[in-house]
Structures are given as structure tokens and as C-alpha cells.
Length: 152
Image (cartoon, rainbow, N blue to C red; front, side, top):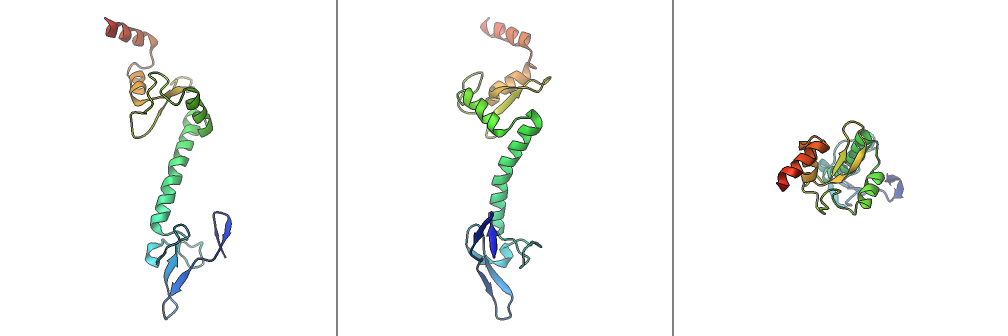
């Protein structure tokens, strides 16, 4: 019996050669019957091969890694869950808390702004606003002087 993601599934299809050696196996993810050299080794499986073909395993691990890495970073750095982050971003109107930009300005996404002393999250910013805050070192007096300079 083969179990995938906690659900009972039909057994995966396998093809053998004349001598009984496994030559092809069905991927548990894409359901294609592929040569066994496209499956990585796994001591947990009776046929010593992973249930997913290598391309599917890489794709699934990459997707899982993105969400897990982000959630772990939020928890570790700001003691915040993904849901709390999304709630804060939603309360801002899903835009930068300073300039109101609707695009993050980088392929890496939105920046989580926080007080470097207390580590409390202040808001979600675009890259430009986050860099500007970093360059003035979160100093309100410096920001005021900068604004006076720009106006003058």
C-alpha cells in the first residue's frame, strides 16, 4: 500500500525487466511512469527509491522551503506569525506604510520595518522607504533636517 500526504492511494505502478529488476516507476506527484534513474535513493521505501521523481521533489521542496523559511524568519526575528504579518499588511491597505506604493520595489518582496532597539515591528515598507530609514539610522531629527534640506 502506498500513502501520499496522509491519504490512502492506489499502489504506484512499477515496470520490471525480464530478470525482475525494476526499470520504471510511477512518480507519486506527477503520476508519470519514469526510468528509475530519475528517482533519488530512499532507505525508507521498500524499493529503496523516493516516491517522487527528482524534478517533482525539487519543485515541492523549493515551494515548501519558501513558505517555511519566511515563517521561520518572521518568528525568529520579530516573534511574529505569517498571519500576524498578513493582518498588519492588510491593515495598511496592502501598500507601503510610508509612501503608499503598491509594489515592493524588489523581487524579494516587502520589507518588515522594526525598531532596532525594541525589535517591535512598525510596519511593512517598500524597498526605497526601508533603505531611506536605514540611511538616516531611524533618527527623527535627521529625518526632519533632511526634509528641511529638501524643501529649501
